[in-house]
Image (cartoon, rainbow, N blue to C red; front, side, top):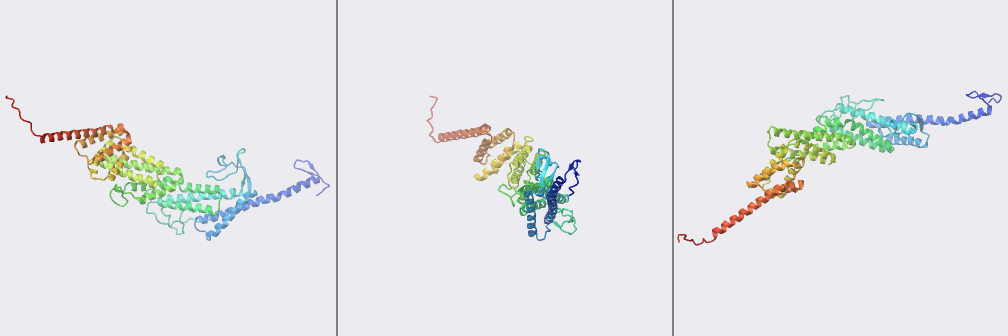
Length: 489
C-alpha cells in the first residue's frame, strides 16, 4: 500500500492508508462466502436437472438399472436437503408468494414474510428441485391424460401400441410407450381408470423410494390426482360406450328373470359391470368433489328410466302391475350400485331416493298402480307362499311406498281393493293381509290404518254373527217339535 498518499472514498472523503487497508481486508474476507453461495446455487441447478431427467425416464419406464439409479437419486436429494438445513443452500427472493400464503395451489412450500409481502431465504431444495419437480410432474400428467382422452373410444379400445413422443424437451403423451409409429391407442374409460390407479401407485412408491419430505409428497400426489382425475372427471362419466353413465345404463337394462346374477326376486344384476362402477368410484373418491359427477349420473339414469315407465302408463301400453314390477327391478339394481359400487355412501343414497320420489310423485298414477299391484299380490301372488316369501315381497312393496309423498291417495285406493277382497272372500291369505296392514301401521301410525283395521273387525264380527246364526239354526233343527195347538177350540 502507498502510505504516502491518501485515498478518496465513494463520497469524496479522504481515507488514511490504514483505514483503506482495513476495508480491503473486509472485502477479501467476504469473497469466500459469495463464492460458496454461487457454488451452492450452481450445484443445486445441475443436481436438479439430473434428478428431473432420471425421474422423467423412470416415468417412461426407460430407466436402466433403475434400483441403483433411484438409490443415487435418493442420496442427491438428501444432499440438497442437508444444504438447506446447513443454511448454505439459500437465496433471497423478493417476489410475492402465491396467494400470500407461502404455498402454491398444490401445497408447495414457500418461506413467506407476511409483514413485507416477500419471500425470504428460500432454500435450494425448494427453489432448484421441489418447484421444478412439481412443475414437471404437472406438465407430464396434464399432457399424458389429455392425449389419451382426446382419442378416447369405446369398449373395444384394447390396443396398447401407442405413438411415442420422445426427445430432450418432450413429455410423454401416453401410458404405454413404444416406437412403433402407430396412431395413439383408443382408451376406454375403464382402461383409463386402471392406468390412472397404476400411475398414482407409481408416484406414491417413487416418493417413498426417494424419501421425499412429507410436504413434497403431499403436493406431488395432489398434482397427480388433479391432472388424472379432477380435470377429466366429467369426461370419464360421459364417455360414450364406456363411461360411468354408459355402464350404469347397461346395469339398469339387465333383463328380469331367473338367470345368472338373479336373486330370489328374479332381478338380474350385472355384477361385473357393478365392479367397473366401483373401480371408477374408488378412483374418484380420491378427489371428493369429483364424486358429484357420479351422483349426478346416477340420479339422471333413475329419472330417465322412471319417466319411461310413467309414459307407458300414460299411453296404456302396459298394465299397472308392470309399472310396479319395473320400479321394483329399478330399485334393486340401483340399490346394488349404491351399496356395492358407491360403498353405501350416504349422499348417493339421498340422491337415489330423491330421483325415485321425483318421477313417482309426478301424479297419483304411481299410488294407484302400487295399490293394484298389492291387490294382485294378496289375491294370487302370495297364495300358498311361506312366511319368508310373504315377508320379502311385502318389504319390497313398502320400499316403494316410502317414496310416495301423498300416502293418503294410496290408502284410499288400497281400502277399496281390500273391501272387495274381504267381501268377495278373494284374499289368498289372511295372515298376509294383516301383515301388510301392520307394515303400513309401522310406517304411518295408527291413524293411517284405523279404517283398514276397522274393516277387519267388521268382517270378524260379521263372521262370528253368521256362525252363531248357523249354530242356532242347526240346534233348532235337531230339537223335537213342540205339540201343535188346535186354535179352533
